[in-house]
Amino acid sequence: MAGPRRRRGRPGLPDAGPLGADIGSFRLHLAAEGKAARTVQGYTSAVRWFAAAYLLGQAGKTSWEQVSGQDIEQWMVQLLDRYSAAYASIQFRALRQFFKWLATEDQIPDPMDRLRAPRVAAREVPVFTSVELSALEKTCHGSTFAARRDAAIIAVFQATGIRLSELAGIRYHPGDPARSDLDLHAREIRIAGKADKPRTVRIGHQAARSLDRYLRARARHPQAWRPTLSLPGGRALPSSSQTCVCVPPMGLPTLQARRSMMLLFWVMVDAVSVSP
Image (cartoon, rainbow, N blue to C red; front, side, top):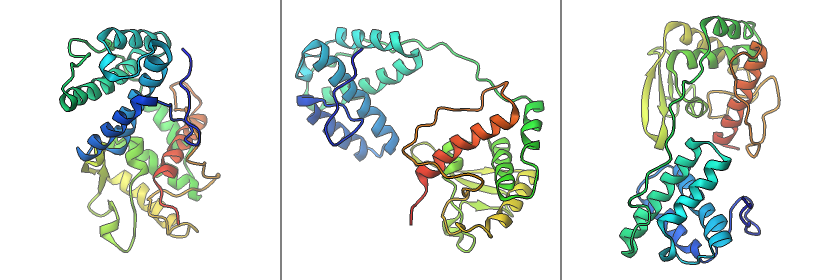
């Protein structure tokens, strides 16, 4: 599958040519509906890729009215040949939202009206065993800033099961509760979930103690002014433009798993941090 042609000056954005105007209108619609920025980006990127790589690049179609259900099916076949069924299903659902909106707005037939998303087989998600978790915790023993921070991160993950991006986005300001998501004495953390929906999670005494030990070290950190609870330390903070594909897979040595987890975590922190 040939890669989509790129717009000059906007790296990573495929050129949808005459089909791009409607994609821009779709973006405005999603934003007006209050969709999260990542959702808007995901939906519009999927539509733009389909337009540039298949409609313009292969089918030679220059208007949305020309799109048929067979075009969608052909595109899904190509995606399934190169990617997982789960990924193809995500692309399918993004296109479905676009064509549903377009049919309502412009009163044209919806080419996806009778189509079904690619079937995704349920897969068991691997998790750390209690032995692996204990070994991972032991790699964080110590009184250094990095050891206390990493121990607190792992403790919060264990206590709450929150997403990596949610943990990276936790705010902290010791003198202003309105700008802090952490209430250590109540053992509560305010989380901004998917679509920025707020919720509060509870932590146990062990996680609270790990956080307390980290906060005492954090107060002495040269970047304690940052608004995020977690701060860099022990290695250079990566650029937000980096792409990290490493995760802590089962069976890795615990120290390598910890480093893998921390690298992915710091990419997320860097992405949500507010620069001075």
